[in-house]
Image (cartoon, rainbow, N blue to C red):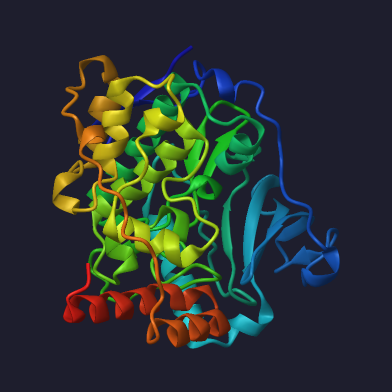
Length: 369
């Protein structure tokens, strides 16, 4: 039986929204293999006198996610996100970790990962969320790419619902990508990872892991590359890049040189989707290219606006965006840029956004395109 509910002014099928999405039928339960020797906690260990560790789900540069039984909640399975010990004493990281939990606990939507509150004093910092069976959209795209147009538009529409709810509650995700979208075995979907999410009231920039200052390079909006403030239209761009990949099979600005890819998104437009997949409709191409406009004012101004067109693709007016695309300016590091690139390579990916912003400022004052 289909159960429908109204959330944030939008009506959603919370029971099994992916039921009619062909590519999401019989989704496998998948998680990456993790070296148990570097996880800190081990299966069989009782953590904080409450959580019995049963498995290791994933490990990033800054935290490990464990599967555990919650002994205080009928032994239900949960996921624990535990930062590595070397980061727990970092005040900046601890503050960001607390803000991630705060944002997660305030959001209650069927398409957003559910955070579980823990009362009392914790022995160390950690976050508890619902445990999800399934695989990430990234894993699905490795198995099947590109996705059928109808399926890709449906998934994007569900993500729009989650984004609209987040934006109505003052939260910008800022790192929407296939790795942060979970396709669940029960036919549901979740937006995950609020590690660099930001509420409108906060003016602080969040950095986390190997992500650049404001997102992941393949999906970053031009304003993120330039170091400008992000808003809800930044999430629209991120979703546009994700939808482009679902429909085409590659990200909008694919280049082995990350500097060239970042330069391309601020100086030009991606290749028209139908040139890479001629089975796409002109209407689907129009939606993607509007979401990927370099000027935020030219994009969809809300996730609800984008969702409306995704659900009525046959009525989308084709304005010829694909005929007005501009070639990106070629990336040619000059004498000043080379040491900056070298310094960024030594400091790691976090320096990308800062260095690109400096180079763009130098080009602007020098009169270069």
